Image 1 (cartoon, one colour):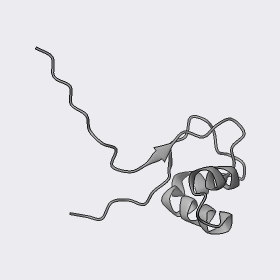
Image 2 (cartoon, helix red, strand yellow):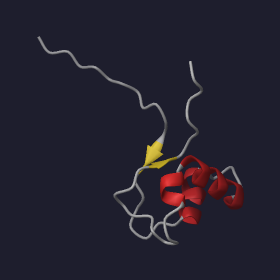
Image 3 (cartoon, helix red, strand yellow):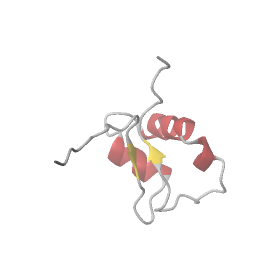
Length: 72
């Protein structure tokens, strides 16, 4: 007998497409938020990428597109 366990992600995330920038990710993933506000949110949720040199987002990164869950 085989059982499958599906664990929902704790936070929504994406892997960037080649050539993505904060602005392109913000526009695609958060279309109902102004690009400026969305970029600021994305950067606050992804400090490990935000503090890299400009233009350092790579397709191998994991970019969180939602805030951390509150502590239980």
